[in-house]
Length: 205
Image (tube, rainbow, N blue to C red; front, side):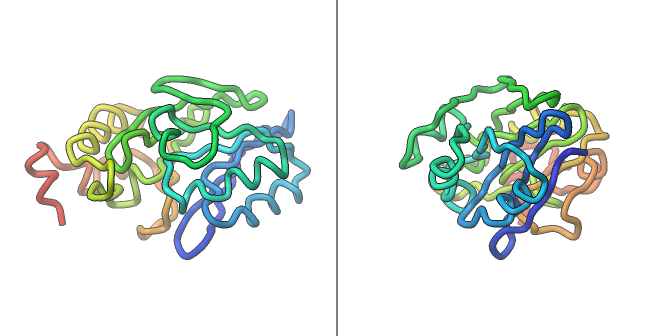
């Protein structure tokens, strides 16, 4: 899998998606410190062409503008969450939009709940980068500004749970027992994906 998971800060995950043929790369959620992802890109002689923010919160997006200035990569954010950033976004995406990274297809899935414009990234037909929508054993909090319990419940049930079980889920934070996991196992064990109603979902501790 042409995807590298990199720990940044205390518990954030950043990602580098790359095409081994074209050597083109995308960095996901550089957060407050893009040193690790940039080092991986340099060590593997990759060309950074995209910086993708799964949502607007600073612990995921703060370094994006600085890295763009150093590399000329284009920043990708959802149209909704771009309005909360202090810098301009080069490419605005909506639910279902696709881009190509060499021979890898990236599909963006709008999953509001943690923020109004949070996105997940389907990498080919193998991986799902979930930002702060889905964690290992849990989901992102909904009590921050712009968060919505109902939107999160809908995103988990109508977007995430409809995806194939074989996908490997890569979350935005290292909060669970594993750094990543198969979506099928999360469907069977994650309390937020097992909730059968919004009322039940709202009572999860």
